[in-house]
Image 1 (cartoon, rainbow, N blue to C red):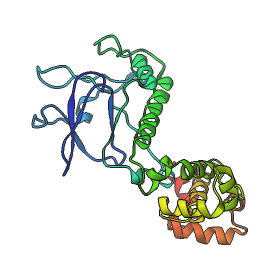
Image 2: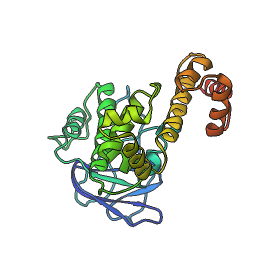
Image 3: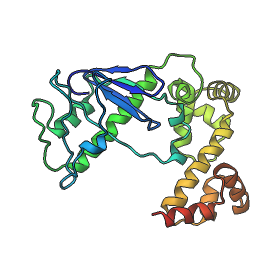
Image 4: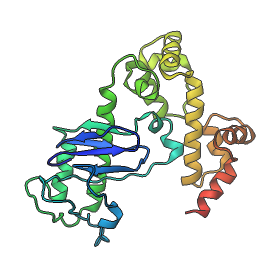
Length: 268
């Protein structure tokens, strides 16, 4: 939201009010209404947006003679095999106040919306705007996690936890490393038993159950985006033989690694 106020509503949920500087992120892609009032005749966004010229953002004006409201529409695509279970742990609407956010200011500057009510977007710099839009979403997710009440359970609580969050960062950053609970404990400042207990309590699964799943998720990504051999990917995922890796991969993704890779190539 840049100026004004509006309401956002999903089916079966109460409307969510939004003001200037706030963002509403819908991680599950739910259909929704945006407006004020919400009982005004609805129009599909796709029917309003014109074909962009040279990749430039397209301004859209809609509504009656009420107070002016301006907002930026951002969209994102996620690789399901990488985004789970983080995205699944998010609510249907993630509302975050991005007031005083430098990255939001930078995005509005790049769109030419900060000091002017003009609908004319800045020319060029499409790649810069796309990167800024990504950073706005990252900032929103970061602020959302930071403001969670202490003592929660699950993925989001794990990210916010001092010790579990550090362990998650290490495992995500170096998934192929020969981690042990003792080694992770030394890195985060807890004993082996204390980290194992805390991780299981907060995340709802043992460390190595999580590590195994994350390595397979990364393996799925490598299969789709690199020409590396299945043997090499299996080794980095912690499996001594391609056969053991294939069996584990099929249990998680429903198909062996070779089929997973071929499917993506066909749909490229």
